[in-house]
Structure formats: C-alpha cells, structure tokens
Amino acid sequence: MAEFLEPILPGSYLGILGGGQLGRMFTQAAQAMGYKVCVLDPSSDSPAGSIAEKFIQADYTDPAALKEMAALCKSVSTEFENVPAQALDELESLGVFVAPRSSCVSLAQNRIAEKKFLATWRAETNIGPAPNFVIEHDADIAHVPAELFPGILKTARMGYDGKGQVTVYEAVNLTSAWNELGRVPCVLEKRLDLDFEVSALVVRGYDDMVVAYPVSQNIHRDGILHTSTVPAPALKPQQEKKIIEAAKALIRKIDYVGVLCVEFFVLKSGDIVANEIAPRPHNSGHYTMNACVTSQFEQQVRAMARLPLGDTRLLTPVSMLNLLGDLWFMGKEDKVTEPAWNKVLSHSDAKLHLYGKSDPRMGRKMGHINCLGESINQARQSCAVVASELGIEP
Image (cartoon, rainbow, N blue to C red):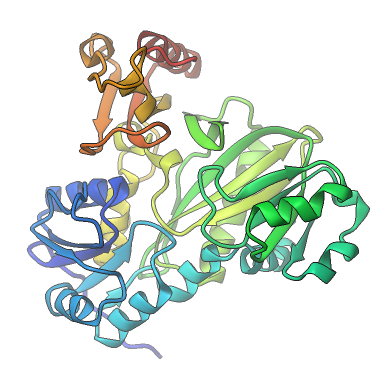
C-alpha cells in the first residue's frame, strides 16, 4: 500500500510549470488561500511570474532550475500540456508531489496515444473518439479508408487553438495536406455531422474523491474558443449525465489528481463523441470563477495540496466571452488602443478578467468576461450586448 501523505497547509510553496494566464489565475487562487507560488517559465515576460512570490526564468528541463523549484515547493503542477514530461518526472524524483503525473500529461501531448486511449475507454462509457487513421509514413496514405473523407488532418503533437490541422475533402488531397503539415506524424479524423460542442470539467483529489462541474456548451471561431455557456442550452439531461459519468470514469482510469477537461462533440443524431483531453484547468472552465461555489483554479490548489475538494455547484447561469488581442486594434491595425472597459462594466452582471499581458496580438487570448444572469437566456443576451459594445460579433 502506498504511503499516505499529509495535506500541504497554507504558508507553503506550490509550484507551477508555465507562466501564462492559466498559471496566473492559479497563482491568484493559491495566494488567496494563503500559499506562496513559484513559477518556472522560459519567458521573461510571464503573466504568472510577474505576480508570483518566486519566478525562475529557465527552460522547463533545466536541471538547476528544477532542483531550485524542488527545494522550495512541496507540490508542483503544470498550466499546459506541452511541458516536457521529463520535467515532471525529474521533480517527482526529487521528492516533489506532482499532480497530475507525467503519464497523464503525456497522454494529452500526443493525439495518436490519446485516440488509442479513448478507443479503449469506449467499452466502459459507450463514448469513443471520431473514426480516425494514423499517418506516420508515405505508405500509410494508401491505406486510409475512403469513409474517413472528408476529414481533418491533425498533427500528433503541439496542435491547439486550431493550429496544426488541415481539412481534407478527398483522398487525392491527402498527400499535399500532409506535406503542408511538415510530414510529421498525424491523425486523420472523419468530419462528423456536428450539432454542438461541450466540455466536461472534472477534478480528482488525492483521497480519490471525484467531483464534476456542470457541462459547458462552447462556440469556437477560427479554432479558438469564443463563448462558453452554462447550463449548456442544447444539452439534454440524460446526455449531460452520460458525459459527466464518462469523464469521472476517465479521470479515475488514468489515476489523475487535479483538474481535467474532456471535450465532446454532440452529433445531430444525438450520439456523443470524445474529442480531446486537456490535463489542466481549461478556457471553457473560466465561468467557474464567478458562477460556481469553487473556481477551477481553487480546485487545482486543493488537489495539489491534498486538501478536500470544494463544492462545484452552479450559483447562477453564465456565458463566458473570450477576449482576443484583436480588440486592441479595432479600426487601427497599427495602433494599440485599450478597449472601453467602462462600457463593459456599466453592465453590473459582467465580470472582467484580464491576464496581465503587455503585448496584445491578433488571436492572442488577453482576457475573458463572465456574463451572469438569472436565466440562460439572460446570460446569453448580456454576453451578446457586451460583445457588441466591444465590436465583437455576438
């Protein structure tokens, strides 16, 4: 039997690999609970590093940096899935409690491994991945089943926010699409008759307790999340129950400690398909910061510190609006102008969260707004009005 570890109490240092906005919001949640935070990130301009008690600017696999972090922190997590697994392994070997462990993070780093895992998960949940085929060599292209077209060719590694993928309508276009992606290992997924997209946020504690948040319904634009609405307006109660039970089964199956997001497609037939796993707090879970008893970032702190998990109850309907760098260039592509936040905040139910990024860029996530309402329709209407005032198509 594994040794039982005591909770890590406030006053201690917690570590986070990655200094972006997820790391920043984690840091704020940890500090609110009395913890100190150490951030490790290669960039000197780190939103999380700028507010943490300790910032180590170094490569994620830098041995000296990892030793420094391990000497300071009792527990470490990661803010994004592309942190090298070897960094997590090294920290664990140095005696740090790592949540989630590298085996869980590695699963989400490679779409090939992820699809294979989701296929094995189908047997117990009756939810699996979209039909797909792995392409690693020229010879593989000749064996792709005709029924996978039209499909989406996705790189096995480093694809996010719509990057690293190409739509392939016919088999004759597959070779050129693979060349366009650099001839790296890829997965071709069949395009499905999609009705809408949702994501489930689940959390597992050190004590094996698992909790789930209400499922969010998501709209993407150009591959980047645009809005998340909770409760999910189009989701039937039996579909939500099935999705939550499946996500809970998944988090236990991989022995995961921390916050995990699983994205799903709901097809026009009513069938549910698993899209991908994100081993961290997620953009679609930002609504929890104002609409739930416990935010996803506080949950990550609780799981890392081996504390009891918090209540995931939804207190109010909410629609979350992503804010991209495009907003700072409205009408003047060569001049940065701060958006009219006073107009946004004239809506008393709009909660603004900016990420402390000094350099707005087109397509870069700069913040989000949680629009609350007494009903789903009221929350969505508030979100549409706020978006319109900022010049964003609702």
